[in-house]
Image (cartoon, rainbow, N blue to C red; front, side, top):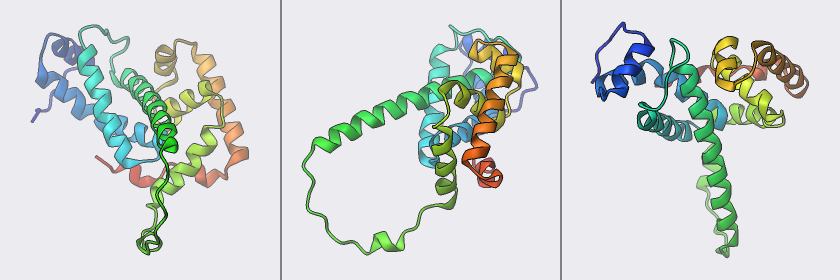
Length: 198
C-alpha cells in the first residue's frame, strides 16, 4: 500500500524511472480514478474500463524510464496512453468478432433469463452518447474526451496531441456544436456514478 506524498508528479515520475515502485504507486493512487473514468467514457463499459486502466498503468510502468513528463502532471500523458490502449482494444475486439462470425452458429435456445436481466443504466446511457461521439472526426473525439470528459486543460491537451491550444479549442467547439445537434443537452452529461467508481 502506498502512502500519501506531496511530491509533484514530475518528482514521483523521476523516482519511478529510477525503479521506485512506491513512487509509481502514489502516481497510480493519484490518477487511477481519472484514467478509469476516461476509459469508461471511451467504452461505455465498467468492466472494460477496469481492464484498460490496468493496461494503461502497466504500459506506463514499462515506459517509465523512456518518458519525460512535459508538464507537472502525469495525467495528460496517462490519458493519451489510455486512449491508445482503448483504440487497440477495440481493434482487437473487432478482429475477434470477425473470427467468431466465421464459426458456425449453434441452434438458438430460449432462455427466459434474458428477459429478466436488464442493462445497467449507466452503460446504456453512455453507449448512446458514445455512439454519437463516434460519428465525430477522430481529432474532435480526442479533444472532447480529454478536455470535456476528463477535465484536462487546453494547454495540456495541446501538448499531448501535438497541436496548438487554439486548435484544441476549435476541435472542442466543433465537437460540441455537432453533438448538440445529435443529442439533447441533458444526454451529453456523463452518468454521475462514473465519478464515484474507484
